[in-house]
Length: 352
Ligand SMILES: Cc1ncc(C[n+]2csc(CCOP(=O)(O)OP(=O)(O)O)c2C)c(N)n1
Ligand SMILES: [Mg+2]
Image 1 (cartoon, rainbow, N blue to C red):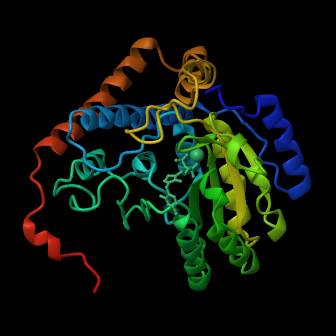
Image 2 (image 1 turned 90 degrees about the vertical axis):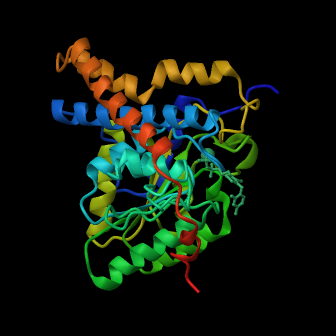
């Protein structure tokens, strides 16, 4: 099959401009202030942890340690890391099944996530949930959902709870370009706008829903405009640049906390791997993937800026890489050696 037609970067930029113009006067989402040294190094570490963790998960899957589904986030790391850098304690996160990066960025342990993937008792859902069903109330992470679009309504419920309780937490609900065509997304938009709920709807536009490109499946491919009918402002953000993500997140969080209601951030991003581990990704060319990897990789961008700014040497970065590899291999050892849950666990954590 010929490579899918996708909007060129410049096409995407002009769409972004019109979205900003048409939807919101006050919300720009266009700032990309430089990071200081601390932010660059933090973003580098966090994104690298997700990348290496996912690579290891892919290996364990190939070795038969992980059963069921496993959807990797490789390529999209800047989205969740930039968002998390702007959030504050108490803000909730909810997402779909491509969720390992969201959990690591929320501060959930690499051991707990990896052991859940291998179905062990030390996993975050005691080995009973697997890749798509992990939660952490302590880290305000509400899953992990396999039903496409369901998390958008649940995330709206989290925002309703914040509003009802009168706290100033914001719900951050992630969903994909494919999920954006689900009906319940718009029922949620309506209620959120009507009740001015504090929620950021994040469309992670990675250009594909399973094997279907946005160009083939979507009438309005500028997802930031999907809230127009409800008066929800939205902007497109370069989701490969962690600085742009963080800046947009800060603006969006402020918008929600000041009582202005929901907002949409469309993150322009890309997944390097197949939809799940069982997808050979024949619907796109290797060149397409390679071009993005070599020109826009989110981690490489930060790495280059760190070196150019003289904030760390190649050796310093190698030491960081080693630290992260150690954390990841420790999690993999744990996930292979921790026992499976006891059979009695079949009868716990069940609502009747
Ligand atoms: C209600 C529902 N319909 C269909 C599916 C099957 N399905 C799983 S993932 C997926 C594609 C979703 O794509 P997108 O929202 O773009 O997210 P991405 O996988 O790109 O992160 C589909 C159709 C499902 N899980 N739930
Ligand atoms: Mg997608």
